[in-house]
Amino acid sequence: MAGIFFLGVAGIFAACKKNNDKKPVCKIITATIAGAPQPYRFIYNSKGQLSRTVAGSALFAYDYAGDSVIITREDSGRYQARTVATLNSLGLATNVRLYTSASGADWNNTANEYNGEELIRSTYTSSNGVPSVSTYTWSNQNMVAQINGTDTTVYEYYTDKPILKGDYLDFTNFLQGYETIRNKNLLKSIYGELFTYDLGQNGNITTLEVTAGNSRGFIDYEYECK
Image 1: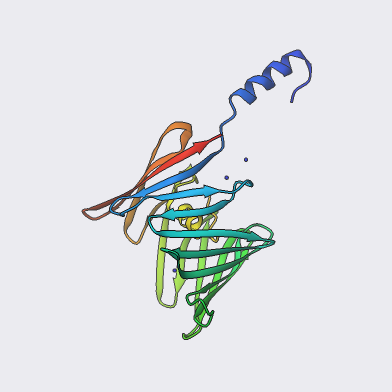
Image 2: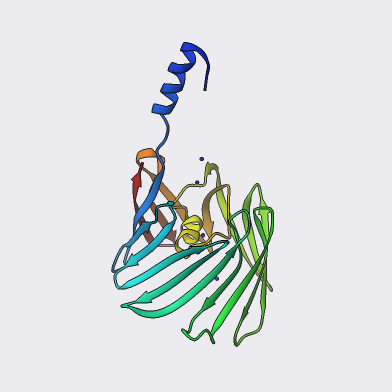
């Protein structure tokens, strides 16, 4: 093919306890993918938005302007690609154009349609190809199927586990710099691959394990919490 007073003496003490117990806000600062030569390191701007992603010689720069985010990828200082994503009032990407040449002559574009926060249709076009349309099915605020022509991809979820940073689809949104899929629960399986999650301090996902037959892969996350 992408996070929330009482009156009187008794109320004051209750409020103090509640504030002391408040869960800190945590951001992923590194992600280490098993087998990858370098970890991903994430840098944020003063607004808490992702500003830079660095992995070895690869650099992804995220710049925000109005309702758009521009993601520029370089490798060893050389241009690789530029993406311009236009966001709606809910922060979901309605149009994503990827320029694969510095001149802008080579590109592909994905136009997304939503029903509220649910992605229902994507139309993919390119500078040298035939348009392709995907539609999506949702159940209980989770995307459960993607249909493209005669191909259907089925997604399963842990319906007793709420979405967290580090979920496979949520991490994909995070890396690409814009959000298209906003689920309620943690992803359990896709393409016959099973996803399991280890939780650590503050209830964050520390390890995502992917199992496919006899193969296993891991993503380990580190956080900064304030």
